[in-house]
Amino acid sequence: MSGSRIVLWVIGATPLLCAQNVRAMYALPADQLVRYEMHEDPNDSESEVVLFAALYLSAQSSDSEAVGWLIVDVLIIETSGQHREWVDFSPYVGTPDGLWWVVHTHIQDPVASEFDVPPFLEGTAAGLYNTSTGLEYSVGGASCDPLCAVMYNGDAAALDYDFIEDGGSEPIAHGASETVAVIDEPLLPPEPMP
Image (tube, rainbow, N blue to C red; front, top):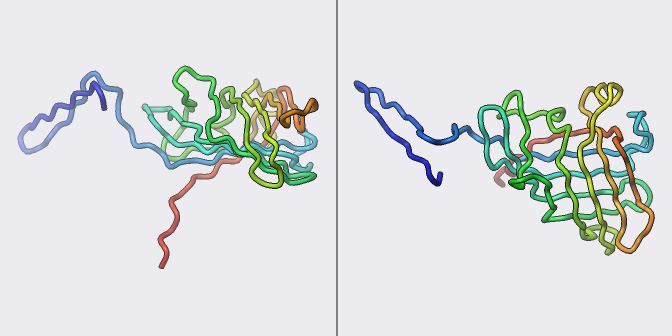
């Protein structure tokens, strides 16, 4: 670490490490895929998922309770209608350091409910599947009302969001403090081929 100074003392036969002027170092969790599912009726978990935004997260830093996640890319999939897909490999993240700091009960085992307030994100996603038209988007966490907090078995968030095709005037999806399902999956390295 830049600016770090590690001192090794040997007391008897036991080495003792002491980090001076350094934030405590903690092991980073595996990369995560966090998906926000927008339902046709946000108050009905059984209604059709019309669109979802998936964030590919890579842990960059941590302290004793929080992880600083880099949002590597945003994948947006329209699941109803034409089934179109878009991706943004360089989303704007509205935080001072460009990381999303999330408090985790167990640093090595993040859970979906801990990703309930994403930072403000915006950008233009390129057409990936079944479209060549770009998609302008903005997504950000909002306050979750009591109903939101119990939806989707507690794995819910309230989001403000807009998804508008380039050159379009009407959003393909819009929500203000709308309840969405949150799904989190660790991304594991691929298994070696036999």
